[in-house]
Image 1 (cartoon, helix red, strand yellow):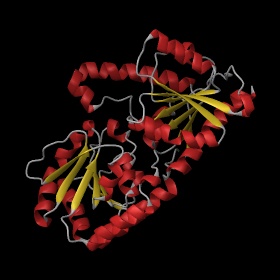
Image 2 (cartoon, one colour):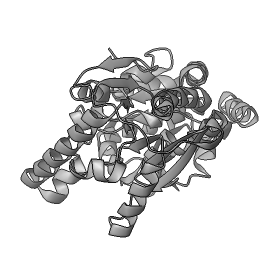
Image 3 (spheres, one colour):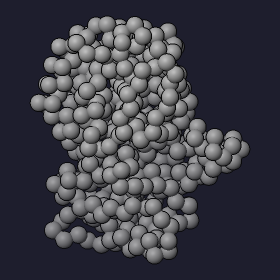
Image 4 (cartoon, one colour):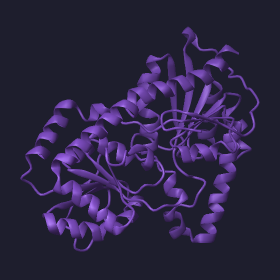
Length: 377
C-alpha cells in the first residue's frame, strides 16, 4: 500500500526496457522535464521546478520543456530533446498513445500524477455538460493508461492517485507535494506567533486557493456567519478572484507568489472545504501544507490527502456538517492558546515530512534510479 511518505505500490504490466541514446559528459545524468506551465503553474512549480537546484547538486541536469503549444516545430524540438536525455519526467501531461514513442523515443519515463485527471471536474461539467464532459474524461483515461503502462516509475501525489495508477503501472511511489520552508523564515514565523499570542485584534480565518476552488466556499457561509458574528472576526480570501458570501465580513487579497507567505502569516487559522468526490480525492492538500508551514491550525473536510496531512485534535480539526464547521472554528477562535499549539505542531509536521529539501532528495533518488540504469546501458 502506498503511503504519504514515499511508499511504493506495484501493479500493471512491466514495460519493455528501453535505453536512452546519448551518454552524458562527466557521468552526469540528463532528464527532460515536460511541464504544463512555468512557475505560475502550481503543479509545475511545486512538483518539479522547486527541486531542480537540488537535482543539479545530485548530478542530474534538467532540461525543461513547457508543453503549451502543439506546433509541429515544437513537437520536433521535444523529440530531439528527449533523444538527448537519459530519462523523461512528465508532469501530468497526456499524449495520444501513438505519439508517445514518436515524441519521447527510447528514454524511460517517470510520470508525475498530482490530480485526478481521469475524472470529470466540476468546472468541466458546467462548461461542457455532463455527456461531453464524460467523453473528455474517457479520452484522458485512455491517454493516461497508455503513459502509465509505458512508464518505468509513476510518482503519485497521494494514495488515491497511487492506487489508480497501480492498475496500469509497474512501479508507483507516493511522493507528497512539498513546501519550501525558506518562504516562512524563523524570524517572520516568530513575529506572527507573537502577534497571535498578543491578541487584541479581530480573528482572521483564511482561505487560499485558485479560481476553480472558489466553488467550495459557499458551504462555509453559514458557519462563518455564526462564528464571525459572535467574535467580530473577518474571513480572508486569498485568490485571483473572489466569491461573495452574504453576511460574512470578508477581506480580499489578490494572490501573488511573492506575497502569499506574508498573507498567510497574518492569519489566525486556515480552512480547506471540499466535497467528497473522486475529483476532490485526487487533490494533494497544498493549502493545508501552506497553512501548517505558516504555523496555522487547520479546519478541513476529511477528504483525500487531507486525512493524511492533518492529525485530528493535534494539528487541526475535521468538519463535515455546518454545525461541525461552526463548532471547530469557534473552538479555535475562542482558545488562542489551543490554536497556537496546533499551529506549532502542524509546522513541526511539515518540517519532518513535507519540507522541500527532503522531498526533493527522494525525487532525485527516483530520477537517478531510472536515468542511471539507462545511462549504464
